[in-house]
Length: 52
Image (cartoon, rainbow, N blue to C red):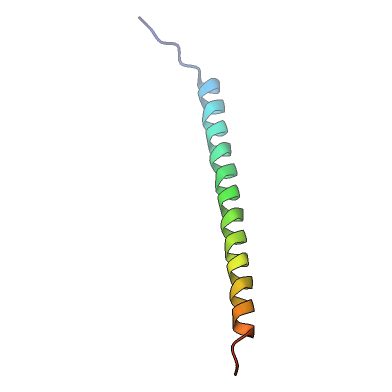
C-alpha cells in the first residue's frame, strides 16, 4: 500500500497553520496591551488622589 505525498497540499496546510498562529498571537497581544492600558489608567486615577 503506497501513500501519495502531496507537497503543495502539505505546504498549504503548514502556511495556513502558521497564519492562524500569527493571527492568534496578534489578538492575544492586542488584548494584553488593552488590559495593561486599562490598568495604567486605573493606577493613574488612584495616584491623583494621593496627597503629596
